Length: 116
Image (tube, rainbow, N blue to C red; front, side, top):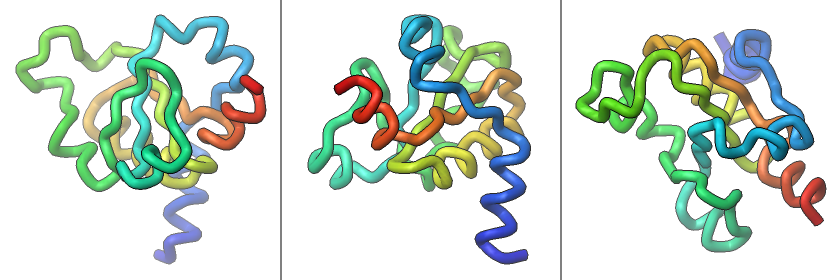
């Protein structure tokens, strides 16, 4: 399987949420920025987002971890620069047992254009 196939599969599994719908319910989601810290330092991030780079999702989040505020029903929005890494991270979260995972349509670039 190629990277392109993996991304297409993840896009088909993880639903997108529009910036408009997301902005109206921002406080109802755990918001995860899956970009690397250097990208965030250069461009900024969505307020109250937590940074968990794509490669650390499995280690940092799990419905069975000791954080009782996090469970399989937690509503999660993931984003990256444009959407591909976020879909891959979202698929990983689904594989870990999270049921309500969404990819922010357009990623951070889409959010910045929406909120400007």
